[in-house]
Structure formats: C-alpha cells, structure tokens
Amino acid sequence: MNKQSSPNKSMLSIGDISAIIQMAWEDRTTFETIQERMGIGESEVIKIMRSELKPDSFKMWRKRMKGRVTKHRSLRSAEMKFSDHKIADHRRPNC
Image (tube, rainbow, N blue to C red; front, top):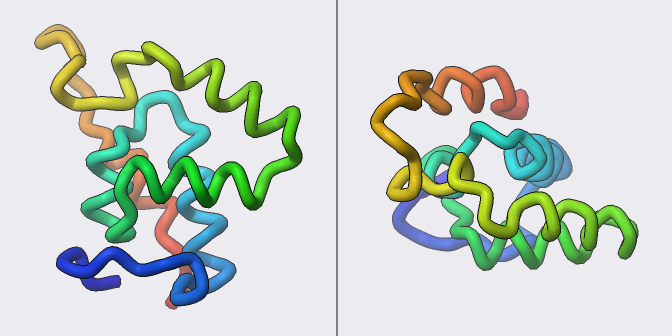
C-alpha cells in the first residue's frame, strides 16, 4: 500500500480491511503505525470500523479508544518501552 496516497475503502482488499480492524482493536498499536503500514489515517480507520462492525461493537470500540494514550505515540509516556511496530508486523495481510 502506498503511504503517500490515502486509499479509499474500495481500493482495500478484504485482507487489508481485516488487518486494519485487528490493529485498531489492539490497544498498543497506534493509529500512526496503522497509517505507516496501511496508508489509512485515524479518521479513515474510524470510518472502516463504523462500516464493518456491528453498531454495538463499534460503540464499544470507540468507548475503549476514547482517551486511550496507547493509541497515539505523542500521548505515550517515556516508560512505555515496547514497539508497536513489532505488534503490527504479524498483522500484515498476505498480498
């Protein structure tokens, strides 16, 4: 996926959408990592989650993500020593 352009949902494969959903559910995978890996920004992730999840599941996810410092690199404390890149690497779809 080209990082420079922001693909719309119709340009994503089923595997891409699945990987985005999995990374979005993971507390430690930041939106920045999703952007780097998949070329999809936070607002696009939210749109995908809204369209792909059941309404109650989407509401639960949004409630969990609201204010969660682990979803944004800039909000993380220096004590957080893990790399979310390693977490996201195993979620890459088979191309």
